[in-house]
Image 1 (cartoon, one colour):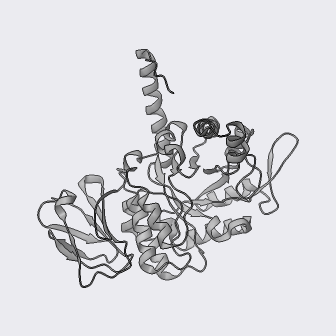
Image 2: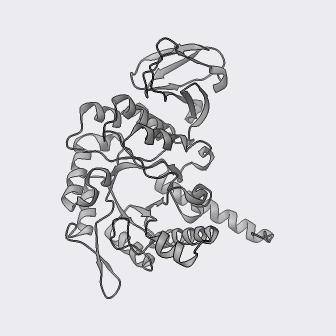
Image 3: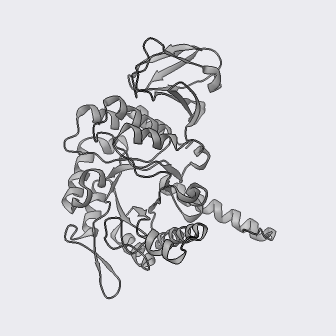
Length: 400
């Protein structure tokens, strides 16, 4: 049971000033959703220093940097052992992390790293429990720009051991652990993106910003399957008000170009993550990327939706049958609309009819199809035919 105690006016004013200062500091780090690439989906535990260097090279030479992909993030399995002083050393796959950071920075990119609040990471390597300040300082000394902090072993080793059968107490322990690393990162003085990976537990979106979180997972892990992508997209409903410059809802990394996703599914995946103001962290095989996948990941018009400086996340407006309509307000009064056929059928004999009034629009609208680049006119109740799992992504520059 929580008991509210009124604060003196001076304390309230100080809290408000502190919140504004912290929000401003976060906005300097992640004013728009971070864009980059993460090693796990393709390399998993096999990732090496050379892989990260090669990926940085490919991000630059392949035009992804020019499209906005800046972070090159090492996921789990870089960690070695701690010495007698508690200093965590890298393993043989990463002989010199400072040199690696310098190389990535020389390309005009930023380097991300991975850890967790438990004694071990998800893959069983050394975590940060009891070494938060020490590790944060080490990251800053190396030149790290992004930390993904993954809950994993903290669950059985701390939450369940210290508070068995007490979910509320377990959640408090979890929040305190993320707060501890957030404070440690802030104390370094280096701007480091803080990514909370704890699967959306305990309404993380409500408390993560106060801990210095720049993004937080709202879902479980994504898989390169349509149903997984659609489920995670659907779990974002109701969370739009928690996203904004410096703090973002994160439905997990991109699977664009992975698995057996169809071209339509890849296109819808990228469209909806952009509509949701989600971090755009690719995880595909960069050297062997197909031209059509590269075209999806580097579509400037779609990326501009994700990176819109207003920072408003899309909201689910309405559904009809298996077709969903989402909308997002953009800078200068513009509006983005995504129409998704979530069903397994092609709507050819019974097309979907777009209801502009439910979008707050009145009369004909002039829009741009962001996947074809073509201009089109929208009228109320106009028929729209979409293949299965495909999307119509529109930008209306001057909605009426």
